Image (cartoon, rainbow, N blue to C red; front, side):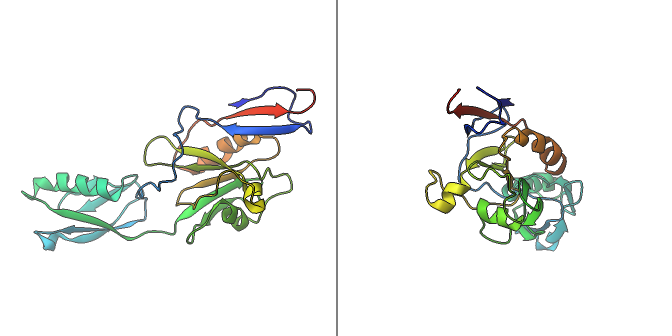
Length: 229
């Protein structure tokens, strides 16, 4: 929802947007969540006491893997630790005391999603340590109508509740930002709103709900200051 107070957003008055926590979003933390497996990831499964059952397998489009000791196991959306426990449990039908280790042998290129008022919105390879500002540059830089001081960053935290925060990229460049930028991780979404903050809701519907693996409500509270308010 976009909560408005005062005049409409076409005025030249100062507009201050603040992120709040609508239902479906969790409080932000800079702790990097554990990696969640995706289709195409290559998994290495090793059995300490029965190495003849060791094998590599690829997470299929349906999110499952198939191994001899445990048949079919759900891997997509699971962390390595969760998958390791699942395989150990599933393999008890064949092994009396399975001791399993699971590691990531290979993964497709990690990607982030950049949209809104940038020159070239879309998915981009993360390619190392990058922040929101670098992500915007990957997407061709800010468009002329971009709102640089309230860039939206959305991150899944390993639960059903993605996290949301605002990043002041104008202040970051000028050295006046009250909150620092944070390194991005695979799957992060960077959205640059227009001067009219209501554009966020439109993009959430047109881009995020259709192209990323979660769908959540999205909200802002908007306060205006200046003459006439």
